[in-house]
Length: 270
Image (cartoon, rainbow, N blue to C red; front, side):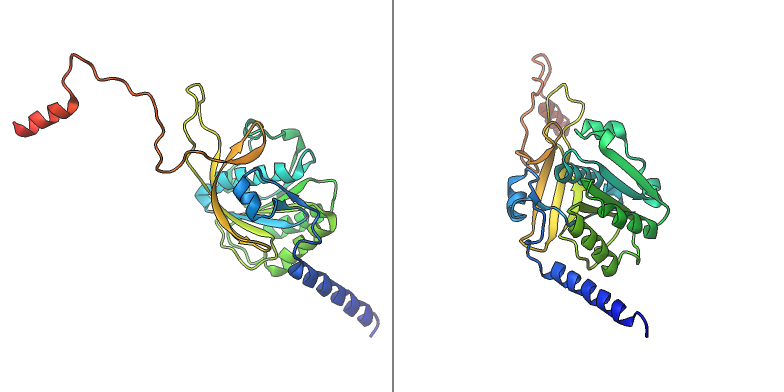
């Protein structure tokens, strides 16, 4: 049958490329980019792998935290090159539009961001695969909301192949979805965390995230509290967090008034 041999050869070559991706231990990667967080970078063997696909998952109510984390990752791996953000229309309706004012406030350049709105998951994946083949980009973000059968192992391999060929990093943002088998280099789960108290003149603290690395194809996993440093555009460890106390000025009790504890004790005694 005409063309059968050619088709079989293409299929064999494709299977060979997929096998090399799944067995590669880092030799074919373009390099690694440090996040700035010492412990996380050590577990990642120097940083986030370039020319690969990384997944970030979050609950629906934590979509803003995951978006901020993805934005930080894209800045680290993309440097000063354009970022293409492919958003499923349903994701935009659920999470809202990306704020360019907020983008600038966390230290990123709005002029480097290009957003593409896709009507459905299939269009988003096809657009992302084409974009990953363009080596002029710094990174490609694919934002998909909710569960879908279209993002299966085949679709994941297609994105990984495109990223590996061009050296462009793919960042997959999955909100309100459960992780499935994929060829992603890493998989993260992100939640918001409490910011440490800042100076009195600050309206709010720096972005702080609870990040959990649940999959690392070539190393260990871990969990960290990361603070995004807007001026340096990198992640850092948070010096104080959780149950630790933060000393704050407390107003002294008035000298001409009884102590509140004494008032309560007298009322109970009466």
